[in-house]
Image 1 (tube, rainbow, N blue to C red):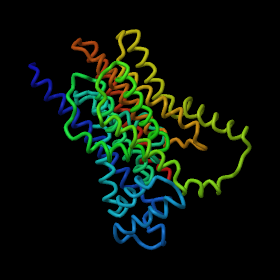
Image 2: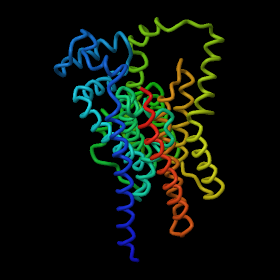
Image 3: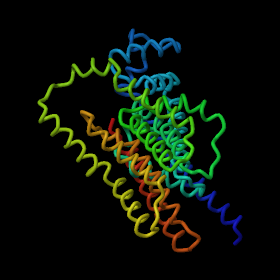
Image 4: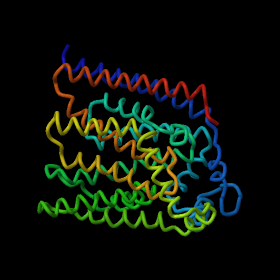
Length: 369
């Protein structure tokens, strides 16, 4: 069998598997109505009236920023998605899922279509809270949608570490909105984007390599976005409704939250990622600064959650996706031309895919709403 026939079979296998998984997810979206916060954001939250125009969204988010919280970028998008209706939102959610799988592969630097199917399956299989990060509309926009533009930003920053690749034209222009919204997305991922960018700048400076202007722009704008998010007046207003605790109890609760996330709902992803890290060091015997940066990004984002008063399972979504990108990067390095290597990759993909199908089918039967 020649290479063209092999490639064609691979694409057909990937497409068929993806179609089945996406159809099942779409059905799950269809049976999940707007609930909880969705119903609030379906209105002009400043006046309580209906959403009738973009002006209502702007008015809502202005009120939100000063009275409830700083995630105005995410929630403006949320209100726009909700305004399309449940069917429109479900279609947009599926598109967002497909885009996220592509972004994971983009960051991982893979082109094999099997990795795309694997990334989509891992998003389901490793997901600690699939309903509240993908099917609940407010969770979907805050995590599923925002992770895509965060990964796109990470891709451009990590790409600068490769001196063999030419700088993308006009990147100094489109990095401006991308860096700002990446920093202004979630309270742990935004600051981590800033830390990653500063690390890359320092690394290139030490190695006496050219530091592109867009890296400085990215550092400044992710910091600005993070500051606008975290220091929003609405955060301090909402904190007044949080039950006060002693300092010792506060520290105790945050340690508990951190350990629970690391040893429970994020544990499978962390376990596979650490295994991949060990393989890179002791089997492949080489790990690039790019891969170290990607792995460290996830660990720093996880550590940043220690500062959060609460750590809901859905908040691990972005960290999970970065770790998936790292895992796929290592699998791609292991995927040589040898038959055993390709067999292992196919078996792993099929196993994860079957688990993803079972997860979605189970959730169709036992919907927690």
